[in-house]
Amino acid sequence: MLHGARILVAPLDWGLGHAARCVPVIKALQAHGAVPILGADGGPMALLRQEFPALEHVRIPGAVVRYGRGSSQLWSLTRQFPAMIRSVRAEHALFQRLKQQLQLDAVISDQRFGLRSDDLPSVLITHQVFPFTPIAQGALRRFNRWQISRFDRCWVMDEAEAPGLAGDLSHGAQLPTNARYIGAVSRFDPHMQATERKGFRIVAVISGPEPQRTMLEGSLIEQLQHTEGQHLLIQGLPAKPGDRQQGNVRVRGHLSGQDLQQALLGAELIISRSGYTTLMDLAAIRRSALIVPTPGQPEQEYLGTLHARTGRFFVQKQSALNVADALQQVLPEQRHSGSGSALEQALKDLAALIGR
Image (spheres, helix red, strand yellow):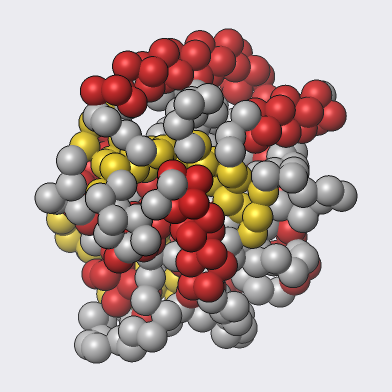
């Protein structure tokens, strides 16, 4: 279907979630004969190269976003907004050179608005069709919709039936005309069973912007060391892999997707951020978790509020983290609707755009 098509796949570099959810898309492209090219930087590039060491890759830098230490990130993100806009313009200028250099047939951009072209089939991956912000939300949504309209297609990573996993972020009054739901896509194999018990009672997976990532890591290690059993904490640092024992807590910089899935399947309790890719991965293996939204991050705080209401996850604020309390909760088994057929249809549509 896509035999020989050279397709750049480029995730946003805020944390690791965007790169992780591109993994199943890249595998699907390969299954249909396409030649994916990795476009990323930093941690996301390290993650993708670990998963696909043989694939061609190109560095595409993005804005370095840093959160403040407090619970409100409004002022911190507002100050960085001009740099974000400059980054979009810079990556667009870079892409105009790269598309010829790499001899591309198409581009799939995960939430990177600058990676598109009027003369090349361009796909945007997102779940934030209707984003939230504490101020000027109407203006942000109009800007977001305009950016989506500049792509040939928009693939919305969520279940078509509301509220799905993203709730109002992906299910608004009217979906853009070029958008389609492709399901809750995950790099995890929903049919995999735990093959061995690792001995980890609690598995904590953290990532995201600093300094909040390090602050959560410190709080978790302190509480896990006072919790009976052996525990695993994964730092979400693929560019800085490490492995150390800190009391009864094993601390790993990063795990491959397969190793991470095995660790999660064997855990009594999973702790993670409420990042959207993490929620899709957990749904794929039908596991719930204690989710801890990044303070002041509107999307993660909304997803925490949403799923505290739906009951699909147990939610705590970072400032009120209580691992002992989470262990007492009876967490529900997740339902997973699957995404294979919807993604397959999207790929067939992409092949038609390319002319294959």
